[in-house]
Image (cartoon, rainbow, N blue to C red; front, side, top):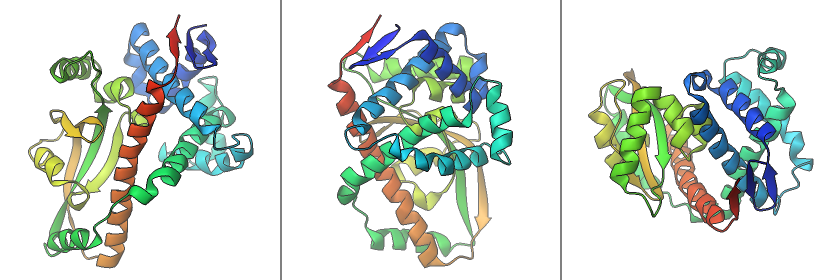
Length: 283
């Protein structure tokens, strides 16, 4: 027995399976030493078990398994595999299969559904403001887009932001940003090395845009305070794209992005509230 969360017991076998799962999603984790990969696996398992404990209050996980086929398909497409059989062959290298992976990503999907059900009514969208912002950008010949990765973290009561930031920066220097996201980030993107992907400047708040605009490709921001903690962003790439688009269509996409951003904040808030009230015992 390695860890107890509530009534759930986590064994050494669970750690091995989690390590294999995380490396399958992000091969760069192979470069970490034994202690580092153990910590990454532990944090990932803790997040999953805490979410699962909460989810069983609202969902029948076994009946929800019918959702996993579509989830697995989305995952292997995002990872650039052509079909399920090709993905399964890859997973065998890590003693995994699509059934095991499906159960894990089902937890993430149901968690997102739970957050939506609980907090969607609290999401506030100023459509007129977004439309003005969008029109101002689309009136230009080109619009800037940024390919970003993130590390979202909180500072515990016994920590200082300067110390936590220094710790993360040292880890990035020695192990790379992707591995740091796996190790420190509380965001769901952590399993994929913190990758957000391409976003255009209309989708970014002014505070964050001011920081990102000053970055060169490959550089990272200092920690930026957000509602439930801090975020460090890495600029993977940037481009200027000619825009000749339907404003109403782009507005709908911008509204969806803004909703997801707010729901992600509620997700972190809700998760940390649950974690604070759970018994966690490390052997």
